[in-house]
Length: 376
Image 1: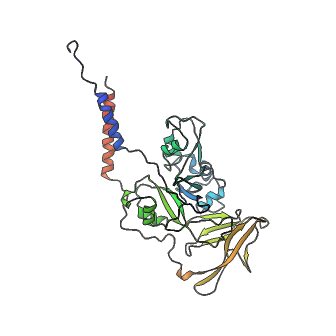
Image 2: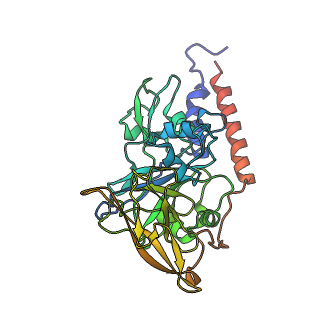
Image 3: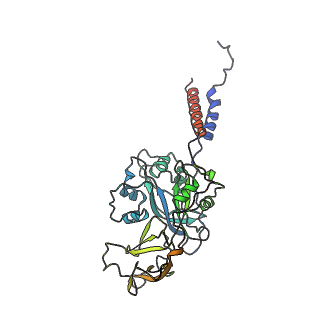
């Protein structure tokens, strides 16, 4: 028995707890918020249409096209089909492909870009900001992003029914002096910079530059990456309402009040626009170049062809669809959009013994801390 007045040894819990917390923080770093540079200052360049990659979590209600449209508050089902290159006959109840492309307006402000006003999310019982960020929006944002955008002082306290703006990072900046469509992409495990560049018709150099990555080895699984997608050139007039129309390969856009469908040609890198099928001719005025209708092509030689190309639409006095003749050289069109070579400097995110070691050490630290905390 201890002598009267003797001081008992300090309880190990107060001494060990700070060590446990520090070690766990070092082994399990918090997700970092992505910040996409957005400094575009040209007329109307402070806003643009960006693409977001979204992979619906398995077994959730967001597994259909209708559910994805509702989650991101898209104005039309057709817009979702267009962004993913799906036929216009695809029903809303169809399963959502994984990942999906979602086209949203992007706003540049203070040197960074975020989706404008959309999407929003209404808090449900049991929700936390982290669950909303990781679950509902599949890691496109962090809970810190949501808290900062909505002036939430305590991320652990959100009210049921509260409406939250989800600020998905995006950009409107040109790359290499050329307009591009910025694609917000959550990196899957096993990816490489070169593989992502090849998949989306970009280049490793551009991806590293826009994400301010010193080399390809810095790529992390779950990282929110800015992938600049090359956009097709067009014959759209500078006075047309849709003069800033940008379409990357693998998708199309409905424009001119949905009367015209424009895709990105994989052979000429020019917009390939056709009248949208199934719409009333009384609503959509005909677009012609002399005797040729919009989208018609004729050959002038074995290499050259003439096309009645889309030139935009106007609505100043009346709704009109513009078109003019363009000539293209099909023998010197250059690379297909998807034909980007892989680079040997790629670093693949394969599972490694070190990551497993981190997991095992973390588990032991947790068990050790719990054991001490349960002591009297």
